[in-house]
Image (cartoon, rainbow over all chains, first blue to last red):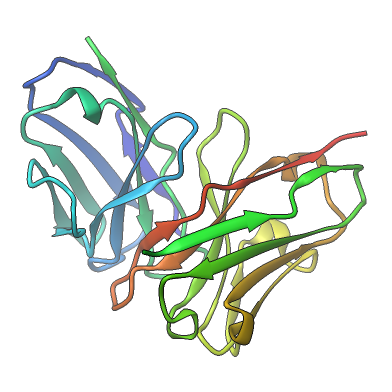
Length: 107
Length: 120
């Protein structure tokens, strides 16, 4: 199975900050990388697919980049509603594994 | 509006069985890959299984192979997960998810989840 490793596991930041979360795959996954946001008690929400494509309805402050094994999710200016847990997922090879998550907290 | 509504969760003893259902509406169900994803209490997301549009291809995570079976009924716009030989570590909220459509994919729509508790 392809292992997905996110860093950091948790992150404290302030409203207005620029934040970057990284995700590394144990082998090349081309651009088959998705990012999700999950708030407590809610289902995940797809933010980014194909490494850098913004899902419809997602604010433009979210962006993704990367190819092969190394990927990043960037939030350009944190808003109060962005404090949540973020997961990367590879959809290159089943099982479509997730990273362990990054919890973004208010500083 | 796309809607996915899971049902069938509950409390079951280790070794028991449970069948989850997911009723889909608001889109042409037969046109999309569908998946089950689970989340143990306080833990991260774990992809469980997916199934092709016509049911001809099914994939599973290793920990459920031989115990869980994913299926679909396109006439009823419904997705199922038959879970046998349940273990304590299968305790989780189980989400039904629809592929975004297109490739590369991603789970574009999710249900609200149904809780499965495996305990004696």
